[in-house]
View 1: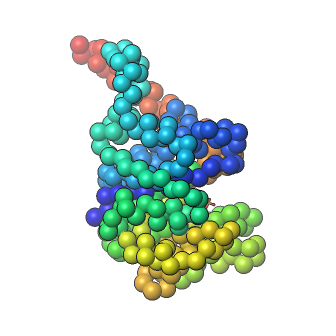
View 2: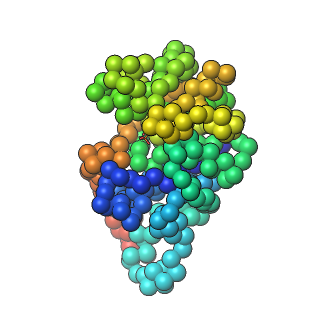
View 3: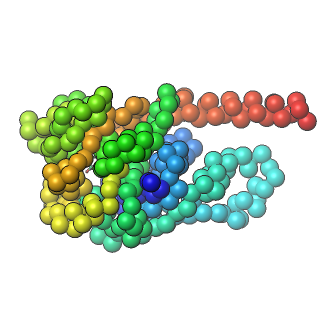
Amino acid sequence: MIKKCLFPAAGYGTRFLPATKSMPKEMMPVVNKPLIEYGVDEAIEAGLTGMCVVTGRGKNTLIDHFDKNYELEHQINGTNKEELLGDIRRIMDSAHFTYIRQREMRGLGHAILTGKELIGDAPFAVVLADDLCVNEEGDGVLAQMVALYKQFRCSIVAVQEVPKEDIHKYGVISGEMIKDDIFRVDDMVEKPEPGTEPSNLAIIGRYILTPDIFDIIENTKPGKGGEIQITDALLQQAKSGCVLAYKFKGRRFDCGSVEGYIEATNYCYQNLYKKDEQKMELDKHATAKTS
Ligand code: G1P
């Protein structure tokens, strides 16, 4: 079964310079949590316990975030500030983290291949942390994809419909719909030139991959932008076997762009943070009453 999730997190985050000059983009806060923590939450919700992070130079704060901070914990021990660490403590209790450094940036396919030693020979999930996904109506996007994997046992990419003017920013698929919202991929193009896109279905940063993808990536030549693209490797896999595209339920924010990041911040503040705050208040009152 799927137990591990790979987080390619070695990129520079140039769209957020100068904020990302010395801070990893995955550590940009959306309200009070760094972006990557939303992805880790989603993976835990999907039943995954092994978080495998592909990092790069200058990403040490990301590693520290998922570790104990004895000095801070000693300082706030027994104060009402302690509850603010509740979520991250729960994460550290339910998942373990392993890291590997990508020495050169040679594309998403190369980043995924770098994670091979951490993943081993089993199907795994991939989360691109700058795509923040939420689904308040039910299961998170990864949980939906894991359920689908159990049924189909092949690689799956999450897709969403994107307006024509934006489609060139994504990997784009085409395929036959085999069931509601599920397509069998027959073509896939990384960032197509305007007018050549095979459909309006864009790949977003959630994947389930079967481990044969590593050999395929090793034999994938550099594609768009001179980089080794996971999209090209997946097309190979689709041709020789099966790759599904899944139009997921929920919303996705492109936190790699300033607009998407602001939108996510507003959404998370209104819909997640405020509700959590209200719940914490109610819990406090309930405990005060019973004690
Ligand atoms: C990557 C993938 C692309 C995908 C996108 C989703 O591109 O290469 O296929 O559509 O993530 O966010 P990037 O945004 O890293 O350029």
